Amino acid sequence: MTQENAYLSEEVEMLRQQLRRFVESEVAPHGEDWEREGQVPRQIFRQMGGLGFLGIRYPEAYGGAELDTLASVVFAEELGRSSFGGFAAGVLVHTDMASPHLARNGSPEQLQRYMPGIVAGEIITAIAVTEPDAGSDVAAIRTRAVKDGNGWRLNGAKLFITNGVLADLTIVAARTEPEAKGSRALSMFLIEKGTPGFRAARALDKMGWRSSDTAELVLEDCRLPAEALLGEENRGFYAIMANFQNERLVLGSMAMGEAQKAIELTLEHLKTRQAFGAPLWSREAIRQRLAMRAAEVEAGRQLVRHAAWLDAQGRECVKEVSMVKAYCGELVNRVMYDCLQFHGGMGYMRESAIERMARDARVQAIGGGASEVMLEEVAKRM
Image (cartoon, rainbow, N blue to C red; front, side, top):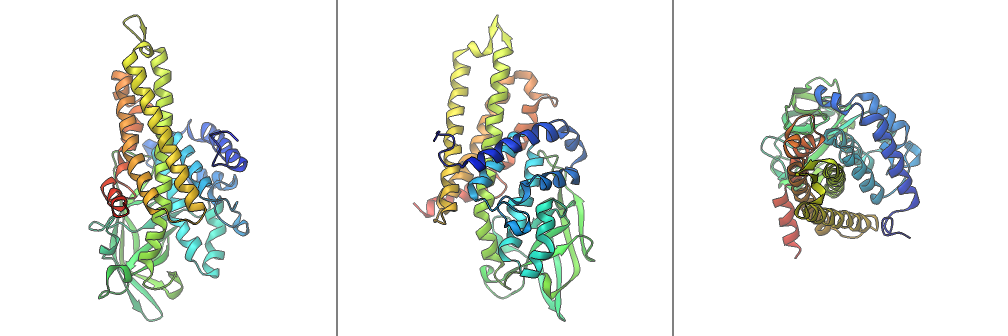
């Protein structure tokens, strides 16, 4: 068994190679167009669904492959290697941040209605938790859901919602118990696109992740039937907390995929770019700095794999996952800083992949749990 796949099965390695081929043929030639358009075409989700990429953790009954957490982190790493962070983010929100809520807590009827389409890429999903005054502080959510006859009526707003415009099905967190403590006051709801009172108010203009659509969502007297409730009433906080583990793992792995790709692009540049009569790679200071970054990225990848292995074994790993999110989110930004620096003036040009990747990477220390929040989770467990 090689060191590379000490944690990974042959099946997961095959998934990696298949996905890498897909990225090279279907993503790399079109990614710049998606950056300008502000979203990934729906057809790409259908293609990925057809190849089995969107259900790698889900039951065979819905078209899934029934793999484990290690498959998810390899999937995320390869998406990160695409060099288009927005594409990777949109797909990962669908596979690892939104749809797992349904897969874990859906009723038999909800699962049968939506899961086959989600795995096939026919139904795109989004998760709407963040609000103007509630990000990592989930208990501060203000969006309100009140019982209305035999259903529910929702009012509120959600912010920074990836896939917010494209999504056919949005999973929305709302406060259902106004007087209770935040952890016992939230519930999750399934809202289909086109539901009266539910709309994307505006697409947001971002620094990076430009090929993922990000929206502000508004709920104005949005009437839902009783069967739109996902999971148990007033248990939404725990559902969100449970899925944060998966979300943070895949974001950390995506960041390491981005960092590895940046190092490869920079190494190629350094070996061909001439300065003072010799390739830049001949400069000891540059070689050693990039070598150190490569060592740190390899350490990050191993930390991701270890945390994913713990999760796949059903073992407690909040500390390790929080380390993944903090370490990898910060490291990818250090890597991008050096890689852009070593590209010189070309690294500052919009035509350069490294310029785009540096912008995309910045959010890795923010989204899914800011580094400061993650380090507090680690500190509590020290």
